[in-house]
Image 1 (spheres, rainbow, N blue to C red):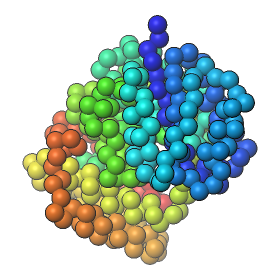
Image 2 (spheres, rainbow, N blue to C red):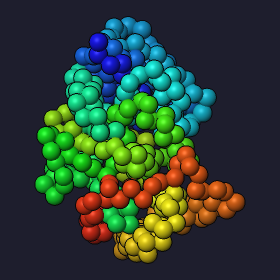
Image 3 (cartoon, helix red, strand yellow):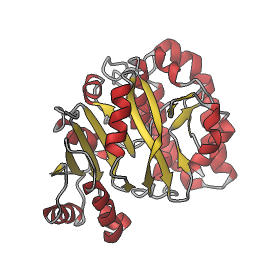
Length: 333
C-alpha cells in the first residue's frame, strides 16, 4: 500500500491576489493529483474575500482521488502558523506536502516526491524545481557564510552537490515543500515567531541539524506565480527580512554566533542598507530599521535559546557552498 500523504494548501485573499480564473486552474491541478492515498487540507488564513467559499464551491462539484477538506482559520496566522494548524490534522500521514496558493502542480508530483523520500531515507525535506513566472528556475537556496540566502538557478547547478537527480541545497522553498511527518512534529513544526519569511530557512536548517538532507528533485517541477501576497516591491518584505534574519542568527549556539556574527553584519549591511542607499529606496531602508527595532523589542526578556527551536552547529553541513555577498543583491531589488 502506498504511504499516506497529507497535502496543505494555504490560502489568503487568493481571489483578490490572483483572480478567479487563475485560482480555478490551480485548484483544478490540485484536484487532478494521481495518488490514491492522500488527504488535502486547504487552510484559509482568515481571508477577507470569498476565497474559502470559492474553494468549497469548487470541490463540491469536483471529484478527486484525495479527500479534500477546508480549514477556516479565524485570523491570519502567517505562513508558518497557518501551515502548522493544517498539518496537525494530518499527523497520521507519513509525508506532508506544503503548497502555496499560487503554485501549479502536475498530477505525478506527489508520487514522484514520495518515491524519492522512500528510496532515500536520509532525505528529510524535498522540493521540486520551481519555475517562476519570469521563466527562471529555482532549485532551492544556498546560504552564505553569514546565512544570507541566495536562490540556486539552473546556471549555478554544477557548483552544488548533485547525485542521482538530487541536488543538495541549504534550504527548500516553502512554496512546494515535502517533509517527513514524524520529523516535522519532532522538530517542533514551523516556528510561528517568523510569521512570514525565513520560516522555511529555519526549518530546513533544523532538518540538517537532525542529520537529514534537504534536496531539490530535478526531474519534477511546479509553476509558481510568486510574490502574490505582498508583491515584489512591497517594503514590508524588507521589514520581515531584517527582523527574521536577526531572529535566525539568535538561534545559533553562542560559539557559532560569535564566529559568524561579524560576517553576517558585513553581509547584511552590504545587501540591505547599502543597496537601499544606492537605489534611493528610503522606504525600504526605513522598514529595515523598523524590522530591527521590532526584533530587539521582542528579544528583550525572552529566552531565545530554547531546545525546541535552537539550531545546532551541525547546521554548517547546509552551508557547504557559500556564495559571494554580491550575488545575493538581486533578492532585494
